Length: 192
Image 1 (cartoon, rainbow, N blue to C red):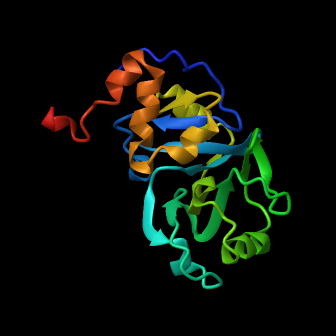
Image 2 (cartoon, rainbow, N blue to C red):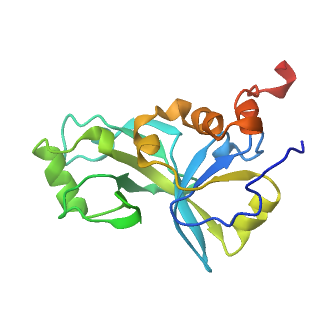
C-alpha cells in the first residue's frame, strides 16, 4: 500500500511518538503507539503505550497492596523488567525528562513509598514490562519503509488521558487527512 506520508522525511527524536502503520507485519507492534524515550547514534528505545499486559501492578510488585494500576507491554525486549513513565511533580521521585513535565523512570523506592501512603495519582503514571529497542539506523530504516509515522510534539495529556485501546486511532484522527482515513482501516483487510 502506498500513500502520501508528509512526515516521512522527519527524523525520530526523544519525545516523539511512533505510530505503526495499520498492517505492520510484526505482532509486537500491531496498531501501536510507541513513546521514544531515548534516541541517539547508538539506537532508540521507548515504550508501547497501548498494549495491556492483562496484569496489574499489585500482582507483580509485592511491596504494595491493593494498587491495581494496569501494566502495559512496553515491547518485546526484556519482558522480565518493570519500567514507568510519569507526569508526577514529586521532586524526590525524579526521572529522566523526555518532554516538559514528562519523565521516564525515577527512584523506585520513592515510587513504592508514594503508592503505599496513597499519594500516587494513577492517571499520572504508566507502567510497563519490557521495552522496545532499535539498533543504530534500524528505526530510520523502518520509517523509510513506511512502517511508522512520526508524531512530533505530542501533548502529554494524550499519553495519559486517552484510553489505551483508543490511542492509536485517536492520534491518527487528530493528524487528519489521509491519517484519519487510515484510522478507520479494518484490523483484517479481508473483511473490507
